[in-house]
Amino acid sequence: MPLKRFDRPIILGVVGDSASGKTTLATGVARILGEDRVATICTDDYHRFSRAQRAENGLSALDPRSNYLDILEQHLGLLRQGKPILKPVYSHEVGDLVQPQYVLPKPYIIVEGLLGYTTRAMRDCYDVKIYLEPDQDLRVEWKIQRDTAKRGYTRDQVLASLEKRREDSPAFIHPQRVFADIVIQFKRPEGQSAESGARLDVRHILRPTLPHPNLAPLVDAGAKNELSLDLARDHDGKPVDVLGITGSITDQRAKALENLLWDLIPEASHLRANVGEFTDANNNQVVSHPLALTQLLIAYHMVKAALGIHAI
Amino acid sequence: MPLKRFDRPIILGVVGDSASGKTTLATGVARILGEDRVATICTDDYHRFSRAQRAENGLSALDPRSNYLDILEQHLGLLRQGKPILKPVYSHEVGDLVQPQYVLPKPYIIVEGLLGYTTRAMRDCYDVKIYLEPDQDLRVEWKIQRDTAKRGYTRDQVLASLEKRREDSPAFIHPQRVFADIVIQFKRPEGQSAESGARLDVRHILRPTLPHPNLAPLVDAGAKNELSLDLARDHDGKPVDVLGITGSITDQRAKALENLLWDLIPEASHLRANVGEFTDANNNQVVSHPLALTQLLIAYHMVKAALGIHAI
Picture 1 (cartoon, chains in turn blue, brown):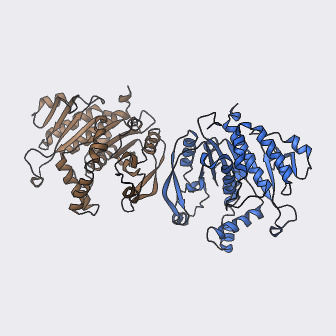
Picture 2: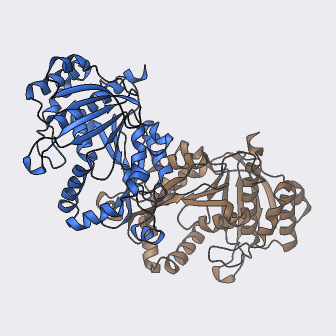
Picture 3: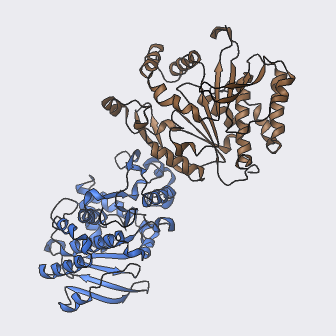
């Protein structure tokens, strides 16, 4: 492990609402860091109640009270210390916990799920915290797409499930946004429909809680509409940088951004070979520069953390 | 919790071969300490492999390699710190781990099972360590009795299972004996058969790793054959005290020993009310003085540990 200066895993958090793109992002980042050096765990496995029990007690599965959050805290702490855990596993098929899974920490750990930043003790375990906040329309579309294709639901069932959880998102998911180092917003370009096949735009809301790479030279050199970096106020009034990458960015400009990032972490140059292999959760080649660059930017922060830069 | 001077649970270990009387002992001790103040966990739930997997890989369930001993270590450490655990649960019916169980620590924790003293880190978690070593004939009898009555096996199946595990006991169970503070040996009085209905005798091999109560005055005062305390060499040659209580001990002498123990822990006098309720695992009233006094002696050590005497 030539990159590791510290004898503990580097932990990435990926939190966001249902179907906000957590798995796609986590898969892409793991691919760059090297899949054999990454353990990925999902925080949605810590259900305290079976489906039948929830039906009885009326608690949503997203309610922190429906989850063993103290055990999740404990497990994140253990992983951060480099210790193995026996992780609960929730089966959507059975509607209850089944055989737990033995997880050995790897140099990098990705923790993705709905409630990963709920408590202070959890939040203290991460090196990099991402919150995914795609446009609501996009998220609904992704959810229908995934749940009908992979989870055997009808379109109407997915819409009913969204309606049923309408109050859960603002109550339990959205309050975690404020704890992220980077809020990532994918959206369809203005005036484009799903059918147009246009690539998505992305905005990264960058909080000063991470040492973000200096992209200014690159942004200044190019056309503002493809790559932008703007000082702005987040919707809570706090100052942030907003990095914008449009789906229409040229291959050349995307490559320039990629080069800039790699030049900043020369110790990780051997990982460049992994970047060609970007795929989405369906193992399709990723052609979206905004998604690929987003994954690379996150991998950059993970490598930086492994190098100990964040600890200075 | 008027008895607790320390803000952590006091942990009792009960280790011994299959059907050596672990559950009966644990139940009796919990009854004395107050069942609502005791959490009991079984170390035999940490199976790494399902029954089918063991059949394939040829490993015995008693083999440390067949168990998540690192997770057991971790869980004992967490319990000792007063933290909850999500304990695996092995189902004999299913032959695999099923839904885990959330265990909140109580002021007293009893940890019973086959492999509780296997590693140093585990052993360091206990305040009192018991090893049960009944006469082999007695254990076989107990095992047949239990496994035919409660686990649906035939007598022949039980004998076959004992034969199959014949090499496991010396390989994995017996080596833990040396780490116990007290080795407890139940046996049938000389020349008595199971049918005679005679009460069992008991010998406590007392190692100097616990501050044992001074029973000398009581032993000296009475008939040596009912209650004895002898300096001896354990079969490894090490010096030990051997406390003997015969099944034929009179109610009066048993009461005197009981009184002596309670007088030594006046802070726990409110627990005396629990002693009348001794029952065995089948909820039958216990009429065996050796068993009742054994449970009380162990409870005495737990109370002493809670009072912090052992930490001086």
